[in-house]
Length: 367
Image (tube, rainbow, N blue to C red):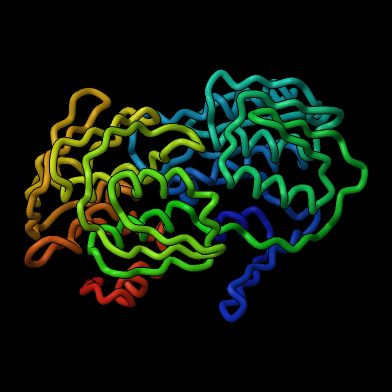
């Protein structure tokens, strides 16, 4: 993402000491092109579309890449931008958008819930004239975090339930300071890791209230969890119980933790079921887990997990971000050595994964 922003023309200063980024706009020296080479492996790259179109009245953005976990079209993104007055065409793998007179606020009703489309619509509406109303929005904590940042920049935004209202503001600010919220999927992954290995693990600098659903489900399975204001302690994994769940938009159980939970359920006595209600091709990790000894069947949108099973280390292949980390978790409890290929997926979602797991006495290394 930093490479993409720098290509567009922004100056990025990284402070590893402060763990911070300074993002500086060079004014009019902006490239409204987001090329394929910088967007192909990162779905979030499409989010520059709304911002560029809103501020500079044109944008040419490559269709995004990311994880191959099923159909993930950008039609809802384009629907919102067209409603705001943009003329859009797709040519040679690029979204070419233009709004010569600028974007104008309208009422937009999303036919289905989409995090990315909600974010792009918010960014586009930031500089739109008049009032923009977004209905049937995603309400993930990351959306609320983005709204908080835009308000710091002078945006007039109100939200209630799945409705967001953005009013035109004449008091835009040139700078703001913002602390990005913790990665709740990363936190959830480490909570499940703690439940798997059955030893005391503390996940710090988080907000347990944001991941209440995940915590409640793990407690229902039988994981002993202690919550504090900004941390969670995993105490043990004794007497785990089977469960049937389905992935849902927030505040439901996230699809991005489905693969990790599946690994935990291989160690639970009885038959558990996970229904994948978000993406239609998100069971690609199943065949790799079965290579390690898991007993998992899939029927349409449902994965049936029979446990407990003793996992055995094997050479496996990561197919996407969350599938790759599920194989890491499986390797933590498997006998012998597990070798995971195509680990480049991991680095898109987990920072210092090996270091963090080693701090919990895991034997893991990158080769």
